[in-house]
Amino acid sequence: MKNKISKRMRKVILLLIILLVICLSLFCKMFYAGLQPYDKIMLKRYIRRVTTVKTINNFCSIRIGMKYEELVKLEGIPDNNAASGIYIPEYFLFGGGSIQIAYDEVNGVSSVTYVENGFKIEPYLYSDGPKSTVLLSDRFRHKMFCKDCDKEKNKIVLPVSGFEAFYCKDEWEESLKSENTYLYVYNLTSSYNYALNIIKDPRTGKYFSTNEKTGKHGLNPGDFSGTKLNDDFSNIIECCIMDAEKMSYTFKPIDENAKCGEGNYKVALYVSKKFGDLWYRQNPDGTWSYKDVGVSDRDYDGDIIYNLREANAGVDVKFIGFFEVGGTDKIGNNLNQSKLK
Image: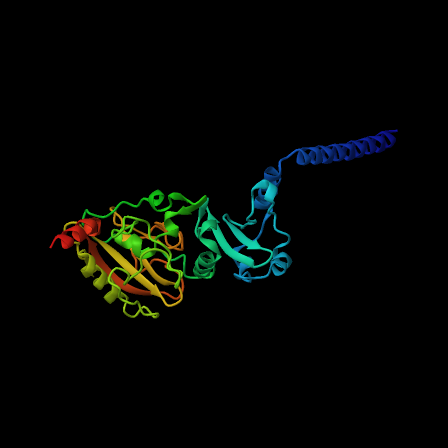
């Protein structure tokens, strides 16, 4: 008798479990069907976040320019959806962080971005076009696959003068409407602009234009003085000194441990034959910031920059040195005075 009851009970419990699973499944389907496209993708991403076992090494074979079909074979069909407003697939990593891969079905992969604690180590800027994005991504790969990136960096700051410009990201990323299209200050300026703290051309009072021959944005070494910058950047310091003499401001080499004179501040320069000149400007607190595509106060490891010699400035770069800059805010006055003489 007891065995018959227990058998019946097991059948009833099994039936209840089956009904519960069916009801739960129907509820999930109804719930999922009622979600907006954006919420559906975010739900998928949340599930992946708590179930993934991927690491950075899983993405070693991804390359800029990789064909869309090859990406799908490796990672599956991306979860982007135009109706959701989400265009960049995101792959969550074991232990935290995620990888975002931007692509299009014609040109393939155009950007690989590492996101850590909500901070994008490599910013992806839609408005700057594919060329700059691809270059930045190539540099960023050094961070992703570098085995020595985790070593502790020196946090001792170099001397400041008290005349350093404040790090103001918004000022350099301001949007400008022009002929029914939007441009951004970072599209019209260069890393050299940032080092000299010059946004508009002091000769005209207007924003700098892009050089149609070279494709370079903003002000570049030699532009003020008319000195041609060599393709290998071998005369870049000469160009900068000639620019300063032409426009009557200060630009000269300085020891990294020296304090700049009154009204002046310190900049530093890395050069890459592939990527060009990358200038850093010291902030009032002794840390450093720079402009590559966008403006940042973090190096390519996502670290605050204390020591330029230890900062991750990308691959294929050579540290050139430290320089003292000052008086660029008075260039307009200097030009007016020279005209009166």
